[in-house]
Image (cartoon, rainbow over all chains, first blue to last red; front, side):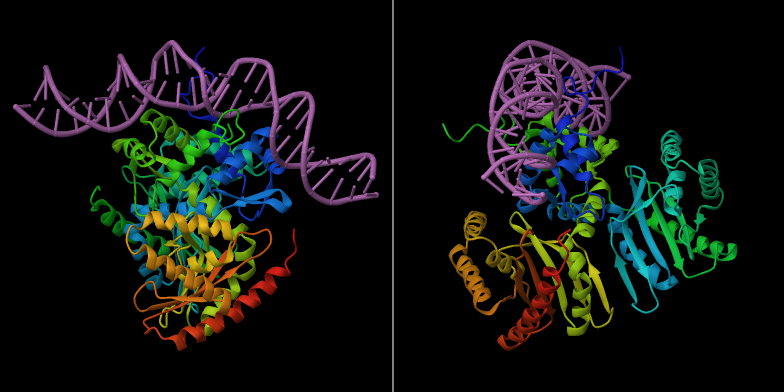
Length: 261
Length: 261
DNA sequence: AAAGCCATTTCCACTAAGTGGAATTAAGGG
DNA sequence: CCCTTAATTCCACTTAGTGGAAATGGCTTT
């Protein structure tokens, strides 16, 4: 008993909708079109089911059909919903401008991200480069949670049970180097607990420092600052970490003072 | 007979999925959280159904639940899918860099958009401003189709039947000024047919010029160039129109030459 | 505190809507 | 022109979804 069979009666949710979302998710960054067969493979759904659901998604405007090659691509609707998400976000509204100003002042990259399953996704990423002044780069970009300062700061900010659930997933994901990686992740988490931030050099010659932003009624976010073309030094990490802590405090003040609707 | 009852057997698509998408769509730009009640109102769905579907969307990661206020907001997933859409887009991949270069060279804004129902949504919008060099502004932003150069260029680019369908929708939407507006729209469309572009000053002191991009196997796009703080003059519109035509030709060449996978 | 008043969620009987294997149709390839 | 391969439609089956009604759970009011 217990373990009630899902999708009996409907208390657990709606199967078709779940499947439809899974189909949208099958379009990972970089893929242009997918045929029903490919979608069926990626999602594990029966081909006839995929055929019907893709048709529905076309009618709903979430997919565009490419008749000539019997395939589909994500339609413009998905970015307009994405845009709605960004403009609705109270956090981004509150601190977006501050992030831009901070990037210019400190002459480094400033980013804000939150989690999508096991990935961190940027809500905003302000890249500072000495020449092109500042330009804000693609929101929606994903980076792996376990390897980045953003992800580890996020892990430090969430509830312990959820954290352990995610750590198990990482274990399953990367076959090799598991022990060392997990140890590193835990080190970063306690760094956050002790110093307020953690520093990680995920990409070569890039130093990134991040801190969690935990607020009632909002998902946990992570704020980061990063710098390219530097050699990784503890001193530099400390300096940026101090900037980040100060900035995070300012952000939290602003966010605490917002009208709750 | 005929007019087969929808959702019998499943040939017409999947009702729950359609409804789930409608719920996501209820989050228009600017809204933060919506409760199930509000969603039910906006979508016209029964409250119990909304309750189940929102739960599913939370499980699928498309919505975040705000337990304290029993409401929901769009989750980060939607921007990561949006990002996938942008990085997958062959058009944006092919001409994004060219758009940036053109914006810098001509010192004006360059945008690329396509339709989402009766709105035009920007895939990319490169804003030129004399000071902050160039920075690319929010993709996903929507502007009304019937009022903008982008929208009218799009209308000029699509099949006639689809165009008439949309024109009827505009008629229904704006109670007043209908005759004049529709006449204006038709004027813009024939301007595209004659000169390759149409010019519209939707917002005061902004001159915008757009042209359709029609390619086999892709939705119709519209490319535009615009300039702020100018007084609207035919001469200026012609000049920008000429730039735009030349640029569109270059774009189409590049797009024609891409490998068809 | 207690009671009343919301809004949201769960229950449940009903059956239509969705399912997926099999048949069919359509699209390339030789 | 026929054959192969993949997508789509059919269709009998039945489960999964539905929505009205009841129950729950928060909040406010006296």
